[in-house]
Length: 429
Image 1 (cartoon, rainbow, N blue to C red):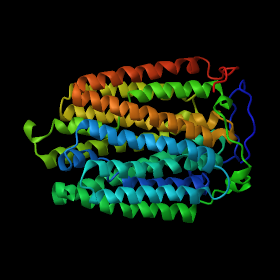
Image 2: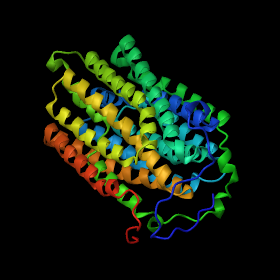
Image 3: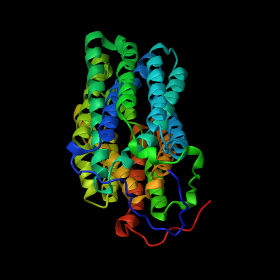
Image 4: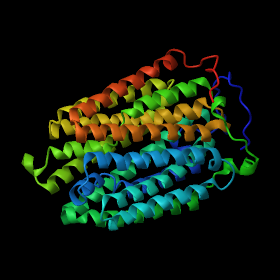
């Protein structure tokens, strides 16, 4: 798709892909195929993610700081590749083929964790897996955006996230069953089996995603790179809020570890019980996430959208407050319930706002920038929260996170008051 210049004072305009029905039953085939691809992909890596912090701490003697470092480094790698992918690979024909490389890379790297014997090996493999994930994220979102009209992009992103999180439910359930059958010795078996749904995802993507909209686009070599100063001021302020929020954001893996430590043998439980109970809480989180994703997409289509993003930032602060207490199973249930609502709102409403408000030719690069700034901030946040937890105290770590979450929500207030500013911010370099 040829990118045209955009004056620095331009206002946000809505994308205008071909009109489609507003019902999920008649959404384009590409939306359904991408959503099913996400289901199997999430099934694959969500078998791994909830057990990974316990594998690292119990089998490889890693601290909470190391757990945060590994996940933060993976997020950082994903962010960097998302910018490149959004700028260079999310346009033109054959996008589904380029996306498939990312799915394959992620699947193989996660499967190889089965043979890791020290935590630096897990670090390298997690970074490799998230490089693959990051490379296909802007491509996937650009395909969804181009396949739908401005009126039902929230529904399309909600459907994709709903099936994506349904895959997380399947992945977590699979891991729980394997742990109940074989105990903690099944960690490596889980990692190895995860490659099966991962390769099914690749097959669905290549066989059923046609990406017809991209076939009208010029070749990649005919595009001009989008410059930062060409993005509207509202988008840049939105990214600033994302950075501040991200500085206090931490992986759900650290939340699992926080709850799990209250269920360890020193507190009257067993190792297997602690891990399985934590995974069941993670399953609750994903069930709520799944159930909320599609309604969140519909809400995003009926509202300015950023109000729901600000609400999600505030809900993350509530999760922090619940984790500060460390009150065992009850606190864990409340924390993961609120976390499920929070993530169910955030991802869909952010994506729908960007897709609806950005010019259509800027959608891929915009998602690339969003992914990049989120990843950089989350790396810093994971190191900050994990470091404070390991070297000072868990309550301080989660308290700092809560303050930054509220600050991020506050930065969105100008966009809530003036959702369509007439002028952009001064150009930056």
